[in-house]
Length: 72
Image 1 (cartoon, rainbow, N blue to C red):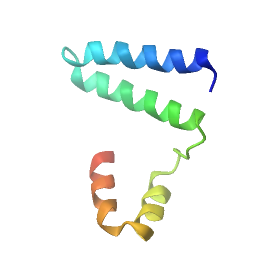
Image 2 (cartoon, helix red, strand yellow):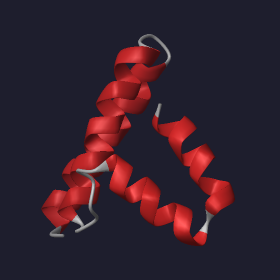
Image 3 (cartoon, helix red, strand yellow):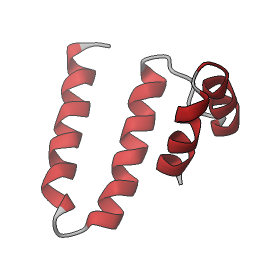
Image 4 (cartoon, one colour):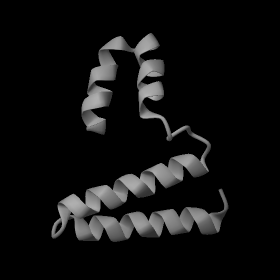
């Protein structure tokens, strides 16, 4: 990732942190989108939640329920 892109993500995250206290629900949704965008940019698969949950359950069966709960 270029320094310009990294700065854009960092700046966007800082703005979201500033909005969280007054608008937690909307800010969490925006943060989720920003994190997904960052993960996609870094090459992590983010499109298919159920596939990722199934993959995690193979090596970490105790963790997958927490993963599902966090996703919900």
